[in-house]
Length: 121
Length: 106
Image (tube, rainbow over the protein chains, first blue to last red):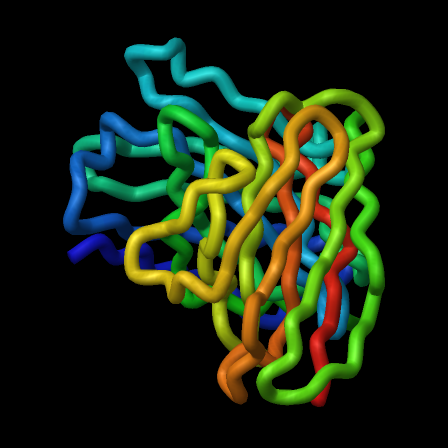
């Protein structure tokens, strides 16, 4: 059974940093493209970025609002995806989901349960 | 960036109704279009991928159509468990973008 389990969310002050983790199981993590998506309270879904599998170069793409502040990484030996967030703003308050892309059409069959990040003084 | 415009943003319907949600892309995305259902406090669930392919395990009352820039999600006969929010997503190119969502209420 595929599982994605996020952790690391919490309360952080504006300007602070936080690192989220996403532990994957039930599939060959190194073969997968992985993503982060967030959802602010009462709002829609927002894609944050994708990290490709290493055989496809491991390239990372980011959404404009987080480019330069957020960094995605992966440790295939630990089956874990990370999101390092810095210079956090109040508007970064959201539930953060990790997802696995399908390799053909890029859809997201698998989602984690989400972890809440609250940026507030 | 490719903008995804969903309509309507909200919709009231009744059990048994046939409902259609539309999604328009600002440029052609071929058929790289997915539809998701989300209930409060839960992660989204994939319903349709590649514009018209039904995800395994999803009820056949859900269907998708379209290609290029115009897409539709149809629920043939609403059931109580279908009252939720629905999102389209293009995965043709990065940045990946979602529609703003459609809230389906009783």
